[in-house]
Length: 410
Image (cartoon, rainbow, N blue to C red; front, top):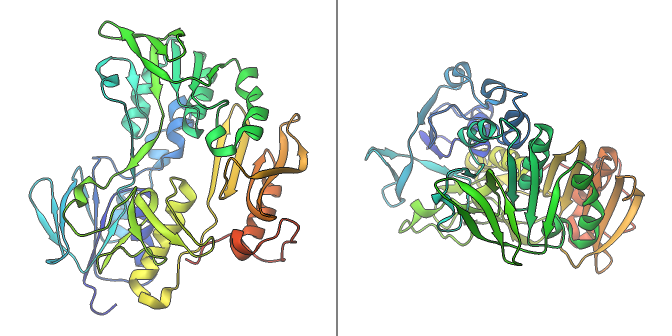
């Protein structure tokens, strides 16, 4: 640690902020620079599709850093600035205003950006949801109870549909899989949960994709590949995201659907680490590389990277049970582990019909993941089981050892 004088963190995301805070918590007293593309102070993203979109909280309520925090952390905060190029040979980071920052260690926490098919954004009324500005624009668009088409039935799309219904909008959810969330939860559980949005008044168009949009300057209709047409005043597109890695071209940092890292979240370039949505790291608990776009991973991984920088090889590896949650139409859906559509699913608590249950996902008699709906205690039990040994060593009928918490090695 004595040789570290300046640490640069690229990305004012949750992972970036957790890295900064953890560096200070671990006693690093050198310079810490945090570079953020947005001009706003860093903020939490899960409320964007729920509380902020619904107008239940303000931007100040979801800030990850206040002006006072910036001062207390002695943080060199560069907002409204983007990384343009990385030169590891000179340990130099070039920003989009041509300023060059030199560093002793660097953390990539640039997250992911939503994807929009070419040509879709030429219509007014077509929205993405990634930033606070996106959420505020969408909140404004929902005023007056317009007809809303949500393209994409993943967690974000389902949450936006839920919020739009709560605000009184007519909502149609379009999903190419057989049911909303089927890509994540598999067909059996996803079909069982389809009644939740239906009972809330959301119309579902599943098993077909969007062909394109019609209208004048504004969007008026959504054309489906099965020949269907949906009238819409507002369209929200949530069909996936890509890791923000374009600026790393030519740097020598290995990239393949994310920044490739070892189990210590170290990249192919000495002194450069990655954390959060952008990182594809080797998870020793599950024995495989993975990239996770969820809050818990970003928080835990950011804290671990600070440890890896300070402690070096003594830090061990970042072992984490992937975990995510989603609040939709009054239901809390939680997932943990590594789920695959072909996994065998077994209900061990409650029933799908009563919308309170715990489902185990098993592969070759091993527990690989768990889904719970309105059963947080059941989720905690099986997260602990997965945290003990990961999917490689947990048999489906193993018992949870007392006192083992589902936390990463951070």
